[in-house]
Image (cartoon, rainbow, N blue to C red; front, side, top):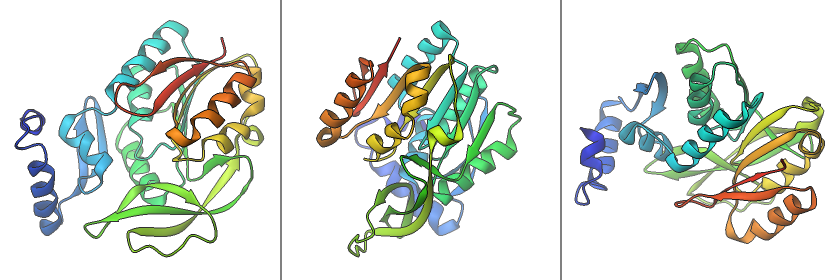
Length: 255
């Protein structure tokens, strides 16, 4: 019913706004929500979690495209880089039991929600790590939006000289080099990369794996970063095969 009402224009904005105020007042905004066959630990105050709770789905055109690709290709691994609370990871782990899911999330709040969901459900094909992937191993600063006194669980890696902004919460996180962690060869690997502007560094840190395996990559690319990322893919033999109708999400593959 909530999903249906949220589609009505007059209620599209009212339901989230009113819901946030009531749940925050009652301190009932965090808990487990049944989405499909998975009990997700989510926070109604978080914009991404709220979409999942209200609509019982998230980024549907991307999800359905990747699901079709998995059925055709039978991937060995799914790397969820920038997993947030884990919707993609749990969706595909539940659908495809033989798929090995490896997830990375540097934001501790998002990682915490992911771990709570993992502990509630019986999955033996998911591993999750509380760090991101880049072309260097180091400690970084991440910035999270603040709205209505709530700190969002999606983050952007920022420079050391980031100016103070009352709408941003700065915290420390860690990144690792993907190629130092895994050295696959001859495998079929599906990637989802959602790293809020850090795409080229994440890709450079995975260059050996991208060159040694059959890879398909769903990646969010902002307009001002597109040429740089597109040229990188072209140079290593990847081609674009999909563009989301609603977001700056693209799919590239090398086979």
